[in-house]
Structure formats: structure tokens, C-alpha cells
Image (cartoon, rainbow, N blue to C red; front, side):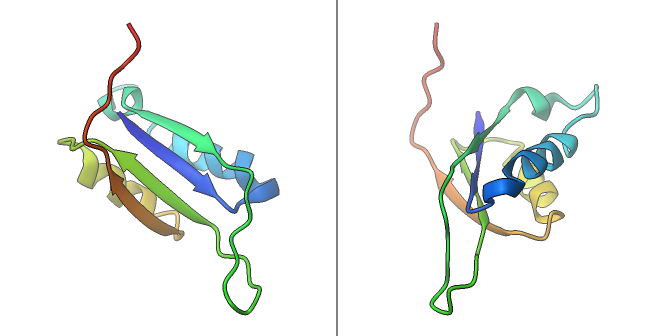
Length: 91
């Protein structure tokens, strides 16, 4: 499972969520079943008080991780990557 976190997008969060899901909307694309998007209502600024929104990809190791990253990079937004040791889906 890959969690794609959106940080600092504020009013643009819903549009960015749509752009992310559009990257994985092919019916034959198995990756679409591996991702979720979490919207954080936070603000991210640099030292000059300029907004610096970013995407954080949180995931356990996945054979599709490099492909997910490559697609996210097409959005031209800063990208962080964080690995999880484990993920336990609800049963």
C-alpha cells in the first residue's frame, strides 16, 4: 500500500488529489488498487515565507514504487519518500 500525502496545498488540495488519481486511472493499471491519497490541511513555508507544498510518498517496499514515484514526479512538485517497516490491512 502506498499512501500519497499532500502537504501545504490548501485550497488546491482537491485538484491535486484529482491529478494524482488521474495518473493511475487506466483500467488495466493494477497500481490504482495500491494507492490512497491523504490530504493534510497544513501550511508549508520556507524562510522567505514562500509556500512550499510537497508530496510525501509513504510505503512499504513495493515492486511498483519506482513507477509510482516516476508518475508523481510528472506533477512537478517536491517529493519526499518515506519507507514503512510494515503495513497491516484491516481484516
